[in-house]
Image (cartoon, rainbow, N blue to C red; front, side):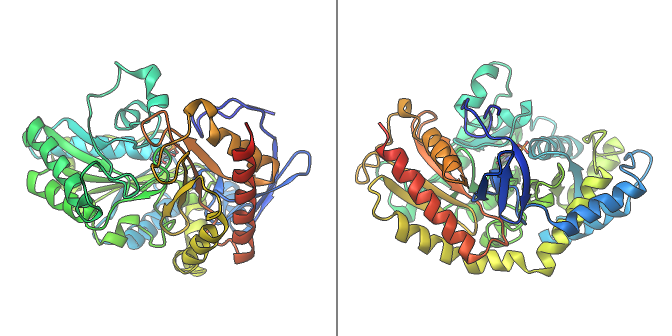
Length: 443
Ligand code: PLP
């Protein structure tokens, strides 16, 4: 038994001990079976216990665990770089492989700063990010995050970041029509840039589909294109944080492909090696590289474990399976099935306010009143209760609190493995419906 800490805020509860997993199922030490409805935290994109990935890891370990980046390159890292640049497309060919999503974001921030300095824009030190965003736990990534509960102990020591609204079609700002949302939110970014002084702004970072803190909120149509235009106009770099929504989860390999928008930098992690080993990447456009190398001799980010050879071998195996089995296409095809099943099953529950997301990345928001969209009293910790009921019912899901104002708001994220069968999707929907119903009935 253990504690649940970071996943959903400050939850402390008794957790089962993991024993093994196969496909969409995991088993605890007592033999109890759970269906993995959220792929952990949108991580296990091809399920558990995949023999091909395990063999690739063992094969690499049999040769050598890791070739340190200042001494060697490796076939695994080179192959992974070519896979990622081909899948990302659009000149996103440069990358640094790291060991987590936070490090991927941190490296994106640092590459953005280094590039601006390299092109003589060394006053561009400020970042703009969005409210309700989650970008990670290292100090830089935490600074651009807006997850109150996780920031609180570190306030005062974080970077001075300017936050703008994250548009959410379910919670429109007063007086704003749905069709105006993208423009209003993009205009807020432009105002922030002009107020800070464009010559001081390094980059704008956002999640194309907002994950943990917002509950799988896609950006409204046209928003990404507008922020791209604004960033280009003011010389501000655009960073897409695709740690959670990228690598195929939303039915395209890059989440921003859906909007036909190309960022300058992009963080990917979770789906890259599917949880088999820790792996992330800060990916950036080719043109950014030359000025940095010319001015500083190298890109000044990375770690001892950068491009860890065995982690990269796991990434190659996972990405080859995704491509060979056409799993990104499968996500796009099966997503409407999952959304329909959820809508049918959850419609009778008065407290289900919104079901949203894209691909196999779904957010279900719970409200006390469907008409007024009033959230539940945060003291009730509804999301924690759902997590506990789901565990008891043999379902892994990812409930989080605070999406409305940092304290109030309860949502559940589902992010099944891309290769989950339709029968497994049905089981996830059924168990989630039961768990939400039971939690609502608890007093
Ligand atoms: N960025 C996003 C969008 C995330 O969802 C997360 C983690 O949930 C991170 C960054 C940080 O990733 P990690 O927990 O691997 O450091």
